[in-house]
Structures are given as C-alpha cells and as structure tokens.
Image 1 (cartoon, rainbow, N blue to C red):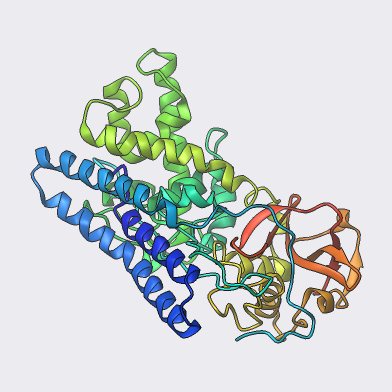
Image 2 (image 1 turned 90 degrees about the horizontal axis):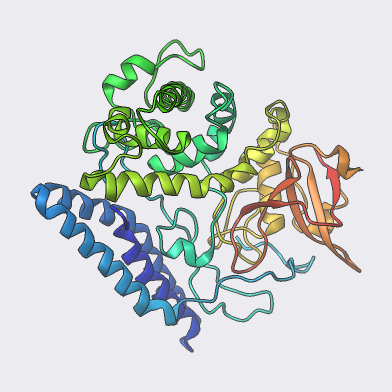
Length: 448
C-alpha cells in the first residue's frame, strides 16, 4: 500500500497526546491519558496489518480503490490533527538534571518476497528542562509516514539494527554495486530489522528478516555464521543471502543494459527486482510498470529505500575491525534504543525509565550492560567525567564517552562514540536517541 493504515491511528494518538498534555488537567489525569495514548499507539501496527489483510481478501479489481480509500482517509486525518501536533523539535541547548537530582526509576510482493511492517512506537516525553509540561505526545521509532516525516527522520527504525551491522558491512563487500547502507535501508523496509521468531511471514509465504520465498532461499540460503545450518530466520544467513542475490541481479541487469534490453539506474532496477522479481524488470524493459502492484508497491518501495540510504551511512561508516570487544558492546547496547524518546532524568544502569533516557542515563545503561564485571558509572554527565582517563579526540574508539556542552560545573552532555566521527546519544527534550556527528568542543574519556 502507498500509505500504512496504522498512520491514521498514530496520527489520532499524537493529537490526543497533545491535547492531554497541553490541558490544565491534574497530573493524575494526564498520566492516565498518557497510558491510553500509549495503548492506542502500541495497537496501531496490529490494526494496520488487519486492514491490509482485509484488503487482500477483496477481489483484485476492488483492492486498488480500497487502498486509495485508506490513503485518502490518512490524508484527511493528518489535516485534521495537524493543529494539535507539537512543533517539530528545533536545535536547543542540551541540558542534564542537576548533579544532586536522583534518577527516576506492507502489502504483499508479486513474485519475490516482502511484506512491509511497522515496528512498535514508544512512550511520551513528559517534562521539559524548565519543569513545565511538554505540550505534545512525541511519537518515536518506526513511525509510519506521514507522522515520521513531521518529526524528521530518525537514524534507525528499531534498535535491533545493532545485531545486523557487522553482516550488512560484510554483505556490502560482496560486489561493488551493493553497499551496506542499501542493505540496511532494504531490511528496514522489509520488516523493521525483526529476526528469529519475531520475523513475520508474508501472505505469499516469504520468511525471515530478508523475506525470502522458499524457492529463492533454496538457491541462496547458506550457513554464513558457521552454526551448521542455513536458517532463513537467522540474521547472518539472511543478510548474506540477500547480498548474493542482489549482487547477482545487479550484474545481470548491467548486462541487460549493455545489450539494450533494459534501461534505467542499475541499483534502482536491482531493488525493484528484489521486490517484484527480476523477470518483471526484463519484461518491462526497466522499472516494472503497468500492473497495480508495480505502481502502488514496487515503485514506492524503490523510492523509499533510495531515500533512506543516507540515514544508515553514518551508523555503517565506522570500520568493521573497530566494531569488536567491550567498546562494541557499549555501542550495541545504546543502539538497541535508537528512536526511544529523551526523558528528563530517564534511565539508569538497568535501562530506560519514564518512557526513555536522558543522556547520562543512556551512557549508564550502555556501559553497565557491556561490562562483564557489572561496572557502574555515576549518574550525571558531570560525575561521569571523573571516571577513566582522557584521550585525544583523534584517538577515540567506539565505546568511549564524549563530553560537551561545557559550563562552570563541567560537561552538560555525554554521548557514546561509535566511530567515523559519529556518536549515539539522547539529545534533548522533544528528541529521541539517535546517531549524530560529534559536536565541536567535545572531549573524550575512556572508561572501560
């Protein structure tokens, strides 16, 4: 479908959250309202899937009008709720709690594989640094369009991308035409980085994180991680199979272009082949066209993947040889929460609280989670600065802590270096855990 029906549900929940938090209602009533908004939002993906399933049961000639009706409804709801949505986050000073403040506790493919799903969303940001109520519900990870576009892109759909990173990098080296960011964007579109028993089975029978049909898996499914079997639900086996499949299609399409059989951008056509089958590319002489599935699914699928590739370049840009050891475990622990809201005073070594993390809550959790000996950091950025040893920024390694926003009392912000000039952090109220370039003036401490 061109519009995920769960967007309608999330839009209503977002507007409801804005009304609840912007009202003069007592705190207890606001808390109750927040819980109800969260319940609605959490239910959105499942309801969206049900709507898709109902549409698929309709006669072929009725499916297009039904899809358009959902799209029209989503647009109408979006227009209706826009006045109630909070303003998009702007750049703001990054602040931390005072040192003495305690921590509070898709539619079916035609002949290839995939169905696109939407991951769960997360909780609200409730308080600004000034202590005033935040006047809106903040949707987070995996938001269906158009709500995601309203808040701006996040770096990842689901924090589970951390499990995929080394294999995207490895599969991105199979051939020159298919790179790791393309694979990451494709897997985000396929099923939001779900794997194992959480990976859905499409109505056509496509399985696993790469949404392979049985026939295609029989040819490309190999034991990539050395566990003794080719498992369609496994991250390594699936990603490497996708890499080989995409590279084979890329090479074949290049040959067709030289022979004048097809025309168009080779990578665009390869991605289309993953969705609709390479035979559809050849039959159409390029981008699959003419059928409803191609117009309403394959073309938007290609456009979405190409548009989201840049989001994954930063997270996949550091050297694979750096992504190992204790430092990599610190990074992986933080990446699990990409898209989780910033919450003032949120989180500690045990994980998020109040629906999210603040900056030092995230670092406390990531370091403790990665430590074999259960090493605990102090709770605030100012006190975390006193742990470990300072190293030059040029010598920073993944897992080192970055400190910035300096004031008389020390640093007001802390982040985790992931390599290639990038960091993962919980920025400020109204934002979410995300990847960003290292800020000017940041200093590095190696704590593990």
